Image (cartoon, helix red, strand yellow):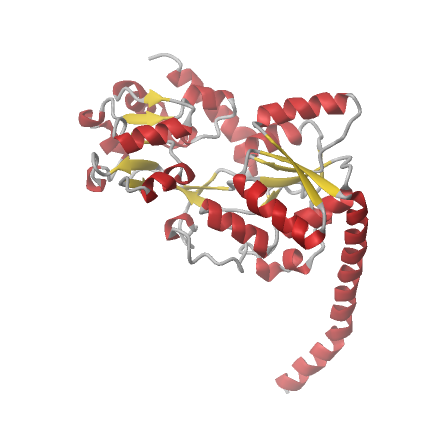
Length: 364
């Protein structure tokens, strides 16, 4: 009986499914034809070799649409866009930006339209394709699409100088033998820019007294040049790095340097983030059809797997191969993580914590 009912239901639903399939295909074909007439899509984001060397050539190969990629520091791009918009020029279609730029500038300055209505391809709209059961928008209105969710490491060690067993707890970092041996991003510089960095995570989780002991008591050397910090780490000059990143360290590890990424320390939880970017759609976009084709493809399996492989980051898709990833970067069920892309944290908590950190660390 159940089999017969299931068969009847499938027969009844088949016409609707076929109609839905025909609807999206018709809309996709019409959009693609219009996009080819527009000729290009203009995308703004941080300097990104994956975008330039792999994403753009592959997208153009597939769809015959050129990609103008405007790459630079977020402050430079925003200044440029503000100037253009004040003159009535709307030249950007899509933003690939960090949470700070997206939520402190693009949204409040009304530079965006909702991206959600642009998603039409079944590869993107099909709920089982996503770990969270649907394309995940950080905001309720559907402006900002999150494509990645990876566990961030807490620090890096040069194990020629610091053994893993010597650092099992956050309190171990306060051991006098590590005085003058630790590097970090400049917490004051990062706080001024919204406090997006690792320093804010440490401050928010461990409090002002711990951070004063760590930064002033341990004589931490600060820099906003991550390449420099990774070089210091490899040289053993500062064999503990609180702000180094895997993408900077991987080349040196391949060259034989014993650099170890630490994901767990007793006393502080891991955090997950949306690196390398959040995706959003510019209002008054000059190439709306090309933008729609681009965001649907970028949110699909092929493009996200390219990014995942090159950056070592976990995506929110269920169909992306993750066998090549360090398993520690993939969020595990049942583990409580600090989500630095939570909308309440981004819009209120982060700013408040950054101001407190600035007050705590501006004077020894």
